[in-house]
Image (cartoon, rainbow, N blue to C red; front, side, top):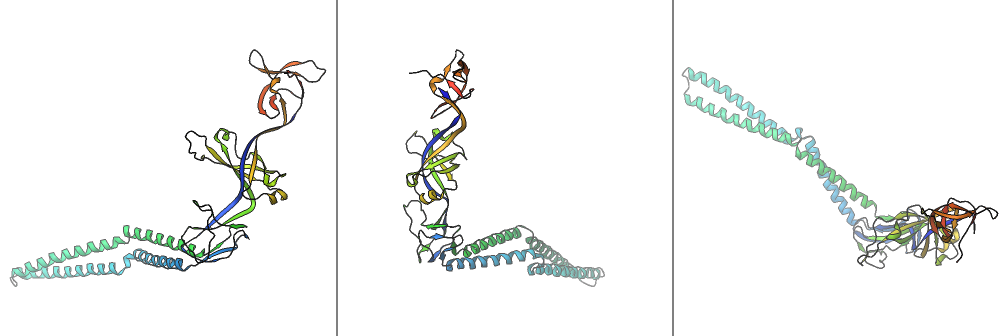
Amino acid sequence: MLIEPQRIEQQLGLVGRIQAARQQTLAAPFEGVIREVLVQEGQVVEAGQPLLRLDPAQIHIQLRQAQAQLLKAEREAHQLRHWRNSPEVARARRTVQTAGSALQATQANLRDTRALFERGIVARMEVDTLAQQVQAQRQELTSAEDELRTLSARGDGEERHIAEMELANAQARFEAVARQSERQTLKAPFAGVVVRPQVEGTSKAALAQPGVQVTQGAPLLSVIGLGRLQVLARVEEADLHQLHEQMPVHITGDGFAGQTLNGHITGIAVQGNATDALGAAAHYDVVVSVDAPQAEAARQARLGMSARLAIILYENDQGIVVPPEALEADDDGKTYVMYRASLEAAPVRQSVKPGRVVAQGVEIQGVRAGYVWVPSG
């Protein structure tokens, strides 16, 4: 049998469905009423084109509330930042000064009264009364100083830290609501086609309509980009080990018969799809990105069409293939073929290394173009 280098490849066949590589669902940025829908289902739109407008009345209320909270937080933080010059601290400082001055005056009076008592001019009762008054004023001064220290520490302790955090939170809330209010007009994120959004649990969601009350995060519209296509397929766990990203793929389908799209694997799911049957094999999603399609194929291929995938697991443009019957093993278990370089050459036992099994036979290494003996029947 004549053998010569030829192109060989090993494929894995899968079935998938064509979908857009780029799709985005636009959700309501805030709770409100739909004021105006500017597009229809199936309409082609450009990037940045307005699609839908929401009534901003409710978000403006939230914005004013957030602004009021921000102003209160700024006022509180400003007071604590300049707390040592605040009226409360100034009053406490004056109280300390007043209590100190009163104590000094009473102490001076007590010294004078004691001198008069020692000379027998005043009674001892006056001295005792002034001494008690000094003791009381000294306690008042101590209390005033404690209160001043407590008030002064307020501007440097936990209260100021809390005020700064509340200010940061109020600022973040105000900015978040402000950003939401600026999105009252939903625009197309890219050029594509407008479709109704897919909602989990429903077969087909309703298209947004004016006057409808929507909650924040509710899906309103979806935009599908037609610039790039991809195919979503599933592979059984037994074949998963053969696949890796960037593998070339040939794509065919009944909807675009006669055309072959080229692509490559761009994603393989990490987690398999759950199965109800105990012990059943899991399936894993495989995403194949379609390379720039030919104009005719791009026109015929539509979203949702079924597609057949031929994933190229292995290819060799200069492979040598022989029928399995041509391979023999010697007493040591080594594989060989009966080979001769030309029809005139004598056959020799040539050791070879078997490779992959492909449609044409078994790939071998160790021989070049020539002839091998294949047993009949």
